[in-house]
Image (cartoon, rainbow, N blue to C red; front, side, top):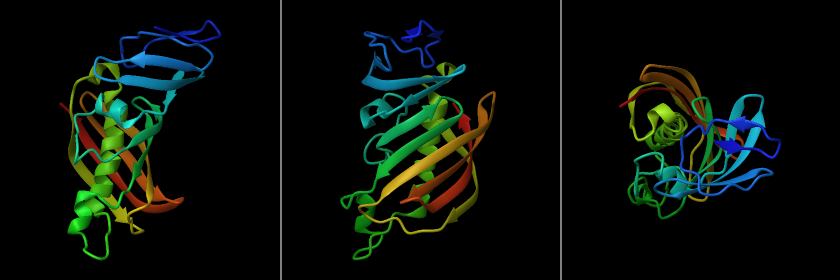
Length: 190
């Protein structure tokens, strides 16, 4: 269990093995695979965690280079919402062919960033730990702005429905506050 500075007790939302606790806002947690440094904020009974590094993300989802597309999670409420960031680098593998001399992040990869961010939110639930999230469908995908090297893609996902092992989410990816991509995603947890 995690204990806050105010003697409130909440359940450990990811059933992580806790090695050390520092109260007054910062909790150091160590998973079996990677250290997780998370700031914890309590709002009523909700548990919102912030700041997961790439290593922390890899402890939750099975994606690896070159196909892990989110670099950090800046806010997460497991099973409800996720806010993540993708730092679009010039050396990304897909820019070599899409397009030489005019690099543009493919729209399908923008949708994949939304899916991966949503997967982190779903797999942080204790009952889904160690599972895989798979696409079941994509609806209403729209692309409004080009994403280029040097851009910081901010991904926001809301998990709207999740029952048994099937769910639906709504996500958007933005650059400088401007919508680049939005989509509704359906997923299955396996």
